[in-house]
Length: 443
Ligand SMILES: Cc1cc2nc3c(=O)[nH]c(=O)nc-3n(C[C@H](O)[C@H](O)[C@H](O)COP(=O)(O)O)c2cc1C
Image (cartoon, rainbow, N blue to C red):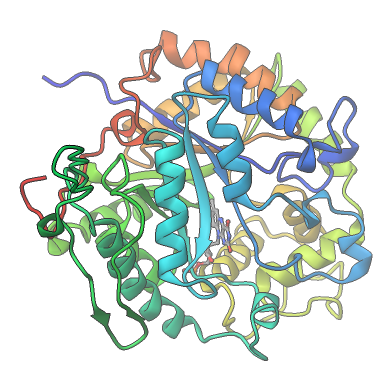
């Protein structure tokens, strides 16, 4: 018999929290976005608690909201993730460092270099969250008038993955012989030139960085549309997903893992981590009151903007006290739009109620006592809704402190979370194999 399956925990690190009202919460750190001292505290606390990864999302434009809403949001700006994670790699030694990078607005050579560098700097703790970028404003920051269509973004993303992983395999693990006596720094037989010519990309190679410590940094994916799921099944080792309920989590889990065999992969080699917003209290009522207090700090201008973004459609003309009207399909985030429509229908919410919910945090939330939340997490793990969670803290640092001081020990007591890291690399801790080098199979 194998040992008990354990949760994998990532921290979804909006440094002030993902919740729009969080910066106004008593005791919160409204200045955390650009305050390295605060960020060091957060990452070190997460490492003490044995979290798998610190995940830094990235967006290539300020959020596409009207100024009336933007001015209320602490999520309007954040560090460029590689610079931040490089700094944080030097004050931690075990926690994984995952950054988002876009396959639509970046080049594979750049991305391969950055992640290879971060993997070396962190001694094997880097992960790449592959996104195709849904915000159309990003296009205008990269020399385009309009966004690339959804299907084209995913076609490029798939080829992009092949190129980046091919570049990481440029050098055999033992290519750098550094033969001082003979004068050979590397062995040319152990170097592969990719010479990729494909429909979307043309990249010569080789990469000018040694093979990453992990072989390849861990591949993460966060899209949930049909092409997003297929990309995940073929390439991802971790999936961040946004599912609103255990039943939908189970469907997503079975669907994506079920596609893996056809891609020649084992389902254990992909960890599915739904995002979960966790609000704890001494009792369930206290936790619910905390969440209401947080939501009450969200301005209604933010509510309407969040609704428009989620729908990919301007909601400002909607009747606030009526039900959500029909909206046309979105080119921006298909799965996001479907989720919001389903939420409104399922809970019979008015436009106003929906807007308030979404602007605070509209996704999966575990709100309750330590026992209630631990029960929920255990259920998701045992009933194959998740392999773990990507945790969103309601405000920082208080929401994180209570999580690591009270919930983590309870999960450990139940045997469903580690008490010590299994290894030194992110792959080892996630239980993922180190990929062989496709050009030098013995590595
Ligand atoms: C947990 C999570 C984290 C995400 N992080 C980012 C991010 O950092 N940057 C980004 O542009 N999109 C991010 N996304 C959005 C997804 O990459 C994707 O664009 C979105 O889920 C729509 O995907 P789809 O078009 O396949 O439905 C994230 C999504 C989730 C669920």
